[in-house]
Length: 226
Image (cartoon, rainbow, N blue to C red; front, side, top):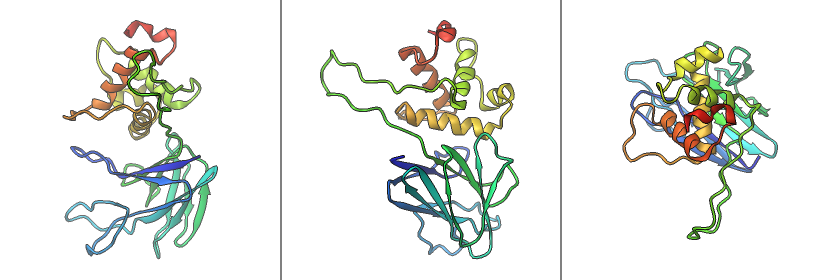
């Protein structure tokens, strides 16, 4: 593991904020009610809502990443994106290691609340020599046994008729829409897909389908979308 990415909550009409944690580095996140707190990843408080004591620090260290709970009284909960019901509590002042590729960090065990997502396996394509038309940039390989691959297959399997929503994919794969969104975010980063100048709702799903059409990322059973 060379580093991890911490992504803030997803909000309608806003692109989630992210911070990169380099190997050996530390980045903090948290809410603030006073306006003076300084976090690497500040979590916006909805006007009029109660300010949760939701704060922590993520360290990238070798084969694992660590989460430190910076709260004085409230626990944090860490769960695999694909198994949010099986959360591990990190007590106030405690620091624990995790080996999850994609994890949700929340201030409560209840699903659906505010969370940050930790991506520990996103890799960028290895750059090739620029400017040579005979050299085609390498496309990162995908693991057909990984859960994100199933999400991509479900997304592209209906292409040509309609673009399924995260809820559609979640119902098909028996997972939560939030987990689907996390896998889609991971794929966009892994495949290094550029963000469009004008972001429209669902642009990431559309970009993934276009990428599969252009590069044949998936197996032959999905060749019909080309």
